[in-house]
Length: 139
Image (cartoon, rainbow, N blue to C red; front, side, top):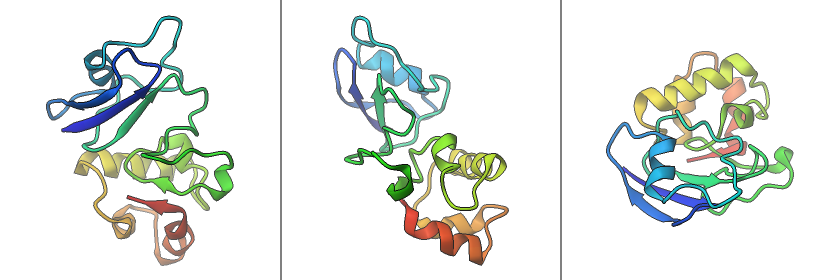
């Protein structure tokens, strides 16, 4: 799988890692964090998804939403379903802790979303909830 490691890292760039690799493997491949930097809100044990971007040293879990998506207001953010954290998913309309965990598990078990419409396959997302969420997400 291919991932982009950016932020406060010694050797930012694009890295090819084996399937099943974790965030800690990506950080290690990129030479580790820079002096004085922290991995912050990153879950180092999380499995990577092909094509995702890992931003090291972000001060807020709202920051790394996906390639080219800096966020200042979560209410107007368009979340990338393949890189959003469970905390970010909880910011979606009608999505609480349990549903965010289901979306995350669906993504992990299937190697990521290939379309926004796959949200309909997540238990707890019916037509009405999908209609509310759809304009606020992308893949």
